[in-house]
Length: 173
Image (cartoon, rainbow, N blue to C red; front, side, top):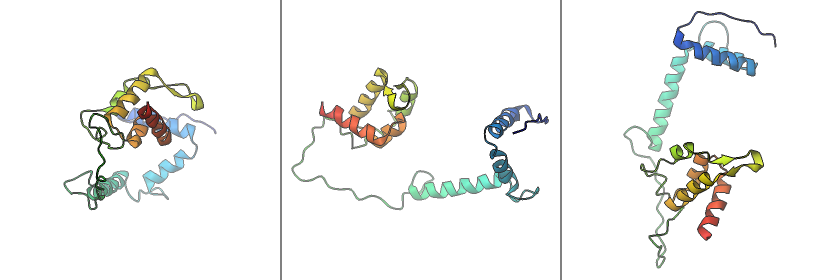
């Protein structure tokens, strides 16, 4: 790939954006074509649809989806999952956290992603990647707080199966 130097006068605040775009074009030769298609609508030099119009359309679609799902706007979810009744005679010790209840994952008081980001949770790479002692302590806190395994996997960057296995082993101790 032949590189040239191109100079352009842009506002000072736009310089980092241009530098990122240039770095992406050097790293991925197909990025320039993708960027041109995004800016010009695919063919020719005349913009078919300006990028901000496209973003406005995407924002409207996201808002509509959030309204349907119930995560945004003032609307309630369209469909709710049926709640299964607890079998008769089954009692759960209220002092024992239930990792599948999901009560702590939704708690505004527990900011788990921020706590994970504040520590060095892992050491090693690939198959040698392991939780650090601080990461293990935080994992144990999440299990004891009743966080859902899917949430824990997302926050920690672990495989869901690994979280399930590790949490079940901890609860068996």
